[in-house]
Every structure is written in C-alpha cells, then in structure tokens.
Amino acid sequence: MRDATRQTVVWEALRAVLAERAAAAGTGSLDIVDAGGGTGGFAVPLAGLGHRVTVVDPSPDALAALERRAAEAGVQVKGLQGDVTDLGELLPPGCADVVLCHCTLEHVDDPAGALAAIGRVLRDDGVISVIAANSVAAALHRALAGRFDEASRVLGEPGGRWGDRDPMPRRFTREELVGLLTAAGFTVGDVHGVRIFTDIVPSMLAESDPGALIALERAAASHPVFRDIATQLHVIGRKRRPAGD
Ligand SMILES: C[S@@+](CC[C@H](N)C(=O)[O-])C[C@H]1O[C@@H](n2cnc3c(N)ncnc32)[C@H](O)[C@@H]1O
Image (cartoon, rainbow, N blue to C red; front, side, top):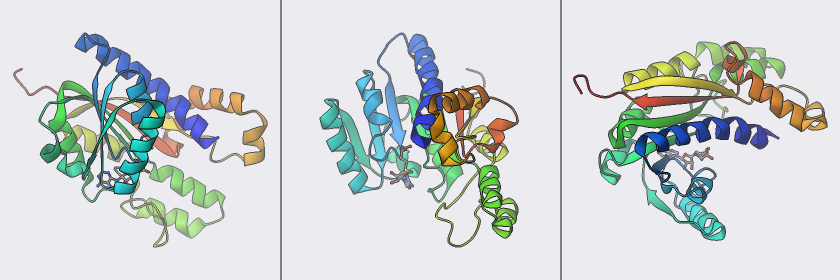
C-alpha cells in the first residue's frame, strides 16, 4: 500500500517533469542520473521509457541487484559505484537532463555538498527530483504511537531523529529542503507530500478501499497543510542559469 501510494504520487510528478524536459530538449530520450538509485526501482522503469539512465550508488550489492533487474526487464542501465558527493569525479559536467536523488539525501554525510555535486552534472535548466524523509511526519508518527518524548526530540533535534535507535540518519522539514536546494543553485518548483494518510490510518482501513485512499493522497499531495505532514517530501528543482546568461 505504501509503495502504491509512493508510486502514484511520485510518478505523476516525474512524468510531467520528463515530458516538459523532453519538449525543451527536443528529444524523447533524456540523460538521467539516479544518485543513490539502489536496485533500480526508478532507474529500470525510466530506461524502459527509452531514457539513458546511469545509477550512482556506493553499494555493490545494490548495483548487482540493479544489473539483474535491468536484465530481467530487457533494458540497459549503467551502474557506477560511488558517493553522490563525488558525482563530479564520476561523470562529466553538464551531462544530465535530470538527476534523481530519491530517499538518499538522508544517508549522505554532507547534503549540501551532494546537491552542489548534482548541480555540476546537470545541464543548464536541468531538473533535480529529490525525495526525502520529513521530520514533521516523524514527530506526528511518534506521538501517535504514544512516544511523546521521542516526538519532542524529533522537533528539537537538528536532523529530526527521535533517538539513538532511530534507523533514519537524518530528516528534513520542507523549509530545510527548499533552503538546501536554493543555496545549491536550484529554483524550487513543486513540492508534493508522499504518504500523507497512508501511514497514519490503521492498515485495516487503508486496505479496505486502496483506490479511494490513493485518490485522497493524490488530492492532498499539493495541499499546503497536508503536504507538510507527509512521510516524504518530493521536491522538484531546476538548475539556475549563471547570472548574465
Ligand atoms: C533507501 S535507498 C533508495 C533507493 C532508491 N533511490 C529508491 O528511491 O528506491 C537509499 C540508497 O542510497 C544509497 N546511498 C547511501 N549513501 C549514499 C551516498 N553517500 N551516495 C549515494 N548513494 C548513497 C544506498 O546504497 C541506497 O541504495
């Protein structure tokens, strides 16, 4: 159910971005880099749509699984082992129309450095798609689980973690994500909330009418209040052209 919601809301936004970017570039086949692309959950379907996709990920296991998944789907995806912060050493400047950084910024040591590195491999007007864990949602979820101290800690601690046993290394508020992207040279466009209700309604209710729940998630994804309590935030940004261009 969580995956279905993520797929629906994220892919609708991605499809619109890809169509717009393809029209601007005058080609249906874009150069896409998936930074922290893991086993290819996005990369393989994107290659299936005819795009040239490169995954950069530090995990050899993930890259091996990506290779198998691509082979099963009958598509080619290039896998490069490395850190998103080192993208500039792995790929030439300005080589990508679109860079995905989905559920990865939470794990990198230097999110600002990672976004700067992404900016360098993007063409002018290239698009970045970032999905990251929302600390506001983590506070809500801990409170709903009766973990009130942990909810307070999420709100008070930089990085939005609820304690030492929290498996998530870092979370962001919408303001923090928008601030990071802006400082790294991106103009921030749409921000969508992903998994707003799916993670807070009892699973029995979520499973009783999944189609209606997905429709609700879609309707609330851009809502200025509900968006900000989503488990994940999906931010689309465009690389700003250097002044004077
Ligand atoms: C939760 S998975 C997300 C996979 C994929 N992007 C998705 O949305 O399905 C996080 C991925 O980030 C990768 N990762 C962790 N630290 C990274 C870093 N510093 N640079 C690039 N990727 C990293 C992990 O190996 C893992 O594949």
